[in-house]
Image (cartoon, rainbow, N blue to C red; front, side, top):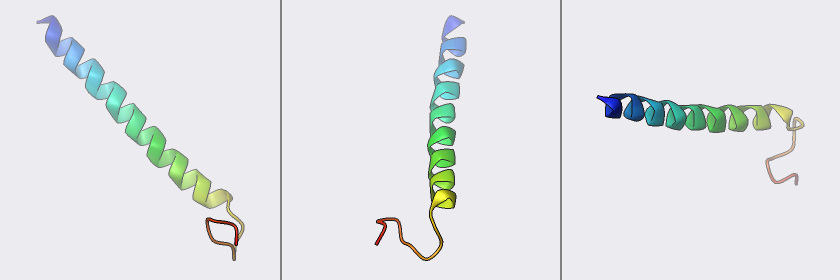
Length: 41
């Protein structure tokens, strides 16, 4: 039954990574100046 704990741990780690990436993308867009695109042009 140890494999259930292992699978849950892997799923939790993957979901944490996905949520962190989404959070990083959202906050990166909020830090941009209005009127400028993502490339800074």
